[in-house]
Image 1 (spheres, rainbow, N blue to C red):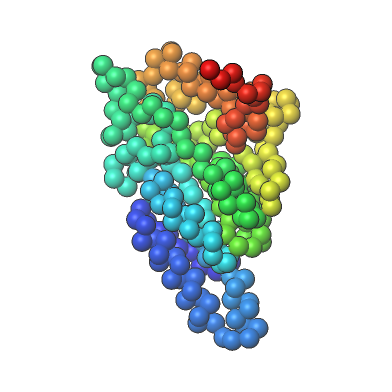
Image 2: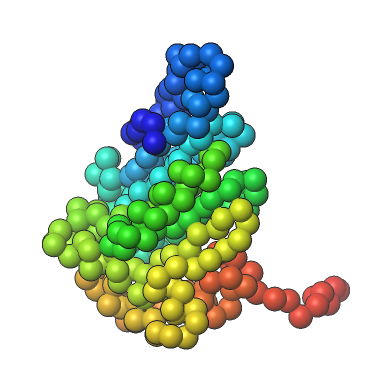
Amino acid sequence: MGSAVDAHSTRFGWFRCYRYCRWIIRHDAQGQDAARAYKRYCLLWRRRGSRHGTLGDICRVQHEEYNLLIICYDNESYANTDIQASGSTPWGANTTFSPPGKVIRNMNTRWKKNMAPMMAVGHPDMKYVATACASYGLDFNNKVRRALTAGGPTFIHCIDPCPKGWDYDPKYSHELGMLSIETGLWIQYEIIEGELMLNGPSRAIAKGIRKRKPVEEYLLRQGRFAHFAPEDIKFFQEKVDEQWEKWWIPGLVPITPGQGRRNRV
């Protein structure tokens, strides 16, 4: 597989990754050995909220020919700076930057950034893009294997429950990961050379084989949503319903079919 690089929450992590890839190729022998060097993989992990802050660098690396697997393990905050809100933080979540108050209950009023579709649509030459969750270990393992054999830059976005940031007992991490998918909030899929396939419970939900669990089961197990009123839970459920029932592709394309041009005044 090659070597792993853990880039911390600075854009210099990407620069170190570029240099490391070049070092691998430059220090291998010439001829056939040099050709084999291009097949080695540099595995880059993005964590905390850093993938949001370095989105431009993530896009930049797609224009290189290196075999690079980017794994974003998403704990939905800037966790290294005491749980600050980021573009991956869910709507209404309690963070140090978005604490609930008496006047304004929910400070974070934007829906979570949808990273994997941005990579797939923005970089159509990317051969492999996927979402995953460690609670479904076999699915995650298979996706890593497929990404490593696809060639070129590939991307996996993994939801990563965080006991401190999400405010829950660590023993419930596996259960929360499963609930994120069973409620339909996090959708498992992979895009292989432009072909989309849903995986696991998400596939069963899309086919009508199983029903989505109420998103309330997921929210109420986390202290970061403890301030939610019934109308907040209702809003959250409606947003999840919308991405399954109205989007062209559940969880990927937030567009609904139009009925023709709107009348212009």
